[in-house]
Length: 365
Ligand code: SF4
Image 1: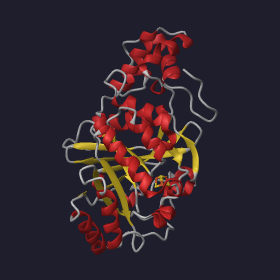
Image 2: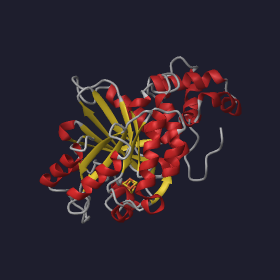
Image 3: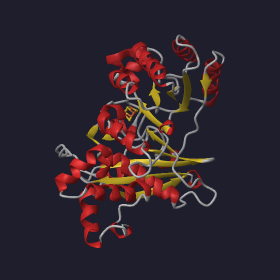
Image 4: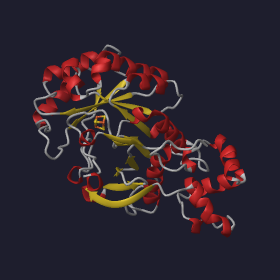
């Protein structure tokens, strides 16, 4: 196990692949079996409490917890919205920085939106996270522990007796650009998907990685053999506007970004989601819907699913959501081109828990 980079949290079992357990255990003077037993508590019983580890020698439990499962992600506050169906949690990290997650329930499923970085370097002007700038990358374990705590909450019935009893979906759409933290993100994905005992056993087909369009990283992800869904935050079909809304577009351009997304579909067989935040009088014109359809349809219609969503307001921002009539017209233009389109509902808006609103402001301001 490599010692963590400066500023990074202490090493944690969830940073390790199972084939690294033996060497890490040896460096700590532990039998490998102890890592496997501790991992079972963490991933299967969703616990990092020494008191729960009754199959381990009492004298060793505390040390194992401290060495293998340091407390990386501490919940500070929780806010509810949408009649308790959306829960935003603010977590404090080891260096007093903070991130947020949003846990949502829908009929038959529970979805966690997790954070991959403290802040974000991508600078999209309509996004609260982007305004923070990048503080640091999260480690794989810091992402995995967000999932563990959400999975434990769902298992314990946070959504009531009629709600789902297991966390079924994870989306990397919270704070940060996950593909700018590539190595840790892929490690976290593998841990989330591994079978119980060394992972949470959540189907990788139920994981979504969102990106603003880091083309080389999309191409690399396509070669990982992970059947995760890719969500591309496009927000504009033309370079003139996308260069302003998503500044990384100045490096890659819309054509190259869409080509990488299509390549991802070809490599994985997973339909790509195109996210499009509808902003009043900015990107919601009918002609832009037609241009968007044209650019997507150059590769056919079956490879992509469009998710327009009315922009979520951010305090102090000039950007606002499209009018409903414009939204409907935009969606209609796409649908008549034969594209699959779902106008997404906004969730958690009143607690700043919706897309683009996460800023962990209670700790960072
Ligand atoms: S929209 Fe996404 S990529 Fe852009 S600044 Fe916000 S978190 Fe970063």
